Amino acid sequence: MYRALVTDKVHPAGLELLREKGIEVVEDLEAYKPEVLKERIKGFDVLIVRSRTKVRREVIEAADKLKVIARAGSGLDNIDLEAAKEKGIKVVNAPDALKNAVAELVIGMMVVLARRAHYSYRKLLEGEWEKVMGFELAGKTLGVVGFGRIGREVAKKAKALGMNVIAYDVVDLSETAKEMGVEFTQDLEELLRKSDVVSLHVPLTEQTRNMINRDRIKIMKDGAILINAARGEVADYSALLEALESGKLWGVGLDVYPEEPPKSEELLKLIRHPRTFATAHIGAQTEEAQRRTSLEVAQRILEALGLQ
Ligand SMILES: O=C(O)[C@H](O)COP(=O)(O)O
Image 1 (spheres, protein in one colour):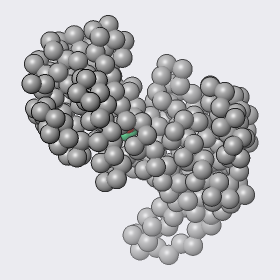
Image 2 (cartoon, helix red, strand yellow):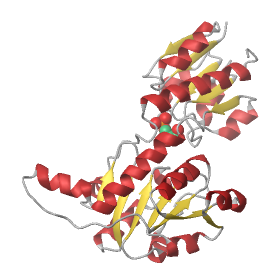
Image 3 (spheres, helix red, strand yellow):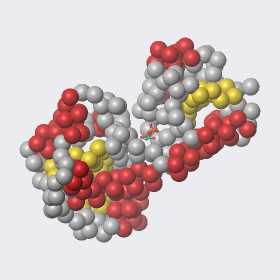
Image 4 (cartoon, protein in one colour):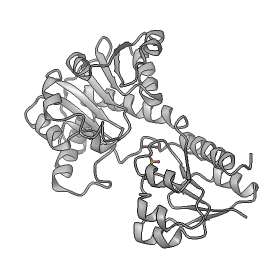
């Protein structure tokens, strides 16, 4: 009998499907800690995680029966893919299931930031009536950095709001962009120069780490908005704080952080800034997305084990 260890909160639908197929599923939400996981992993054929569990080389090397690492979600930056490959362990994920949830959050952030609705709410809570002035998104340009599944979903929704969209990707996706009525560029700086709102949708890799740095922020339009619902390390958060303090940026929307939960004083200062709208990595946190993700990843596990 195959055994699966689940170390993060995963929707029960997919776990139920695995049980129906005869897999023993053990949920241990404490085993996400690296020292615990190194011991706990022994005897399991499948490991199911979200972003909280870091599946590093030590864990993979300590595993004695592991055949599949399943990421109930999209980003694989928390898994040592090289170490998994060396041991012949398959890695599966569910990149389609959450794209709508993330895209809806990003659109919400754009509206909130452009109208400074978060600040208005903050003032009301403080007992102040301040009629803040914002700007409209219709007719403005959204720059989508990373034109994968999520980036394309954000572009589609932004077009429906009447925005012009320009997309950047290292892969030539000009045909896909053309079909969607989106301008395409492989020159990131061109996108930064043209966009009123920039939204990041690249995976975290050595190439994308710190891609939005001080120099690139300088290239952005004065008064632009930056949104990051991808990975914290893709942008230099100290540079973002400076750009808010200097008035270079109109606002910043953050769902992800280089440290989760954020604890450093500087990160907390950025989060507390009146021009920041911040959430706690909730991009994929909808009932619908979690259910779809869990079912999709369970299917991938069954296929990888040859049970489907
Ligand atoms: O990469 C992802 O799937 C999203 O960032 C969501 O991550 P989470 O499953 O840890 O919430």
